Image (cartoon, rainbow, N blue to C red):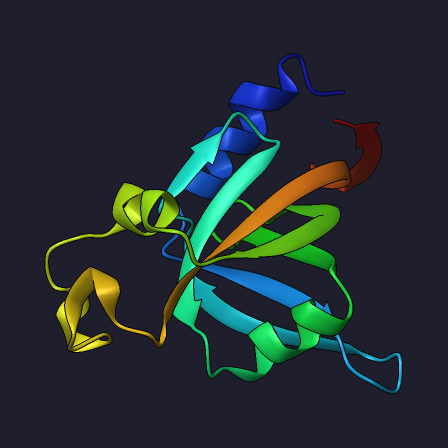
Length: 139
């Protein structure tokens, strides 16, 4: 049993370069994509990612906000799945909040690039796996 879920899960996610983000397609099937780790997180409830407005993931989240993120530490064979809702944020406050030097490689027009947006994931529950055991938890 986790002693401190926020610390345990937060540290696991913070140490990963990649997390897996899942959306639901129009046929009701999950679609999973590897993405850069969240640029910012608020505890283990809210996570912020960058992506392209023109991406398939954005199109799917606009139709169905149900989402899942998964992070795993392959070295210690542990992972966490968080289920919740994904919002597409296009306002300047969110854009500026997670913008980083070098992002012009993906968004040439800078923070105002019309193809740049922020995905805001809000977790409702999760499942943590470690030491050959899993445990569910609410957030």
